[in-house]
Length: 226
Image (tube, rainbow, N blue to C red; front, side, top):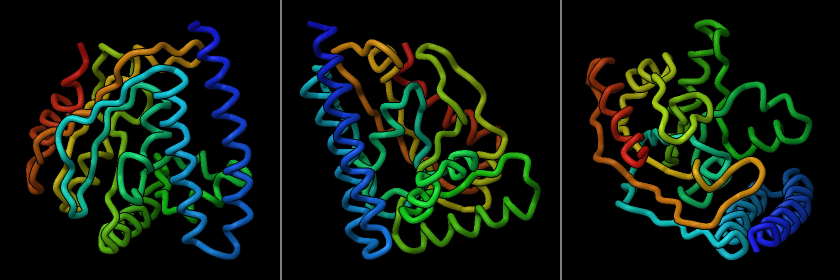
């Protein structure tokens, strides 16, 4: 049964992804609104496949605010990365600059409003990133970052990337930490049924020093890490 569930998931999700991705690229030159709806449909299709084919229950604890904030999300698997447009309303997500070099994907990512993170590219790139993030927040879009910078196995803690504190200081936004425990179920290969939980932590106000904000975010995003 487990193997059949996985076969059904991979066939349905990836075949659906081909259809939706093709539609987004076709829609992009003509209408930004349709393009974004298709991106959200792709994320919603993934959630449907996870819940109905893999047999996972997705539980959300806590309620995110309506005003623009900076969401700091735990990163254990590809699940939460794909699920982001389903979880948040039109999120502006910080993504590694290398992803924007992928043919087709890079153009689509920029059109949707992803924000390139150029690690080690100097002050000019950092200023451009902050300017774009401020523009997105000013338009009412929530900002989403995976502050660990990469996927971290469930049960393991890692220091946040050095740039997170600088971004927090520059943006002056409230931070909402989000814990997620997708790692034990959503493997690269054989995925397992069970429960995946998102837990929205207490808001962290702007203006804290680096040590304090990093400690509070690290503790909150690892709240399900047991």
